[in-house]
Length: 246
Image 1: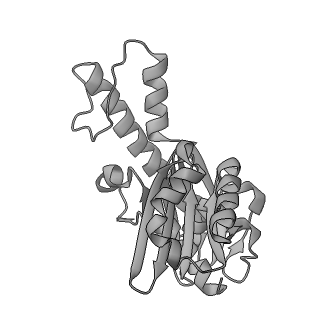
Image 2 (image 1 turned 180 degrees about the vertical axis):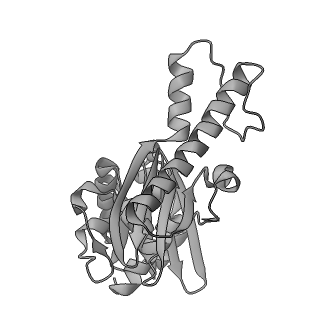
């Protein structure tokens, strides 16, 4: 049986895999507590008999909370991805302490000895990670799309509440159209521009992988062919769990 989890600034995903049993649970990071986890996992309690669980986390406080709950309820030991010696899987060319473990999980999830990848993750931040063969070279962190939009709405009193969608026009005829155009085409330009600069700097060709909640919004307006994999982080954690037989 495999249990893996991804703790982000906004959401927590926890997944169980065992033969025919596949369960995925989504929580708001701010709502994690013992009662919530126990209630959601109630149907699995008699089936939880494994020793370890692997997590990627960018919220240490929430990870420590979940780690304590899992041990107290199920006697399961939680392991944070960066605590594992990953050198047999991937050659990390930067200081591991400076990389979010979700980004490392993404890199491992698409790892292919013969191909190069740029992984773009649309989360609270928009991150770009560069992987060549089995080398993690580093990446780029830009403001998250939704976070930026929410901050603009909060700070600018005349901006109405707007849900981000694809903009069909560049010149907005009203405030809503203008904001949608700025965010959609602004981030499209940012993505295309950063991909181009990475290519020029490294002089390599890449496969482009999108993951995260807004991956579907931008994929058709990027100059390169894009593959969407919204389970990339979880798949990377599963690969680590299997490789190290945890």
